Length: 294
Image (cartoon, rainbow, N blue to C red; front, side, top):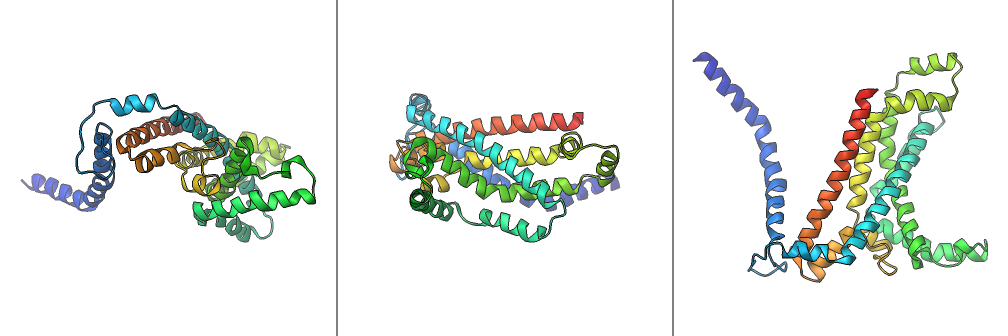
């Protein structure tokens, strides 16, 4: 009996600590997600009280919607290049800011500031830069690059999106890489230098292998963020020109709320979630496997 009472007491203690978190998780994540999946099988328009079951019709509409798959292709292209650019820049900045230069703390704060600015405001600021400042530069520097607004051409508009994303997120990812650099045992670095190893060799053979956990986390965060971008897309390019920069999140919003096809929009959101989760979890699995091999 004393053993049984102790067991119940431990269960009660466990639930008192974990129960509220589990309840909160179920209420704000599990229940809405199940309800969202249910809506993908209805013809709900977003405000009507009636929800008629339509089976797989919404999914058939999604797979025959060319504009959705074009926005998915834009999202994959934008995310892939942005993830590479953000992580390369953040890694280089973290290396610089942990090498002993003056004003490290000040520079860390400066690089982090863009992450504090909302995507909408950031988009409008850079829209002014690409549409007005860059064009006026042509009178001073007559390069074809500055002849017209970057937001007027499909290729340069996507490049503008990637530049702003890199500028915004690199300061945040920078902090993760700085923690990784600080965690590297300095005696290993000093031993390699004494043996005559160059900085590039030390980075390739010691720093990068020991920073695999930081790289995995940074890639995961960047990937999931870029797949869900909507505010920056809306304020910077509005999806134009000719839908060349229209990302999946913007297409889903338009389908659900502007065209009032909430069931179809919900089905598209579910497909976007599955694609994003598959890529992110695959990348994390490969990274963790690589981490164990080190």
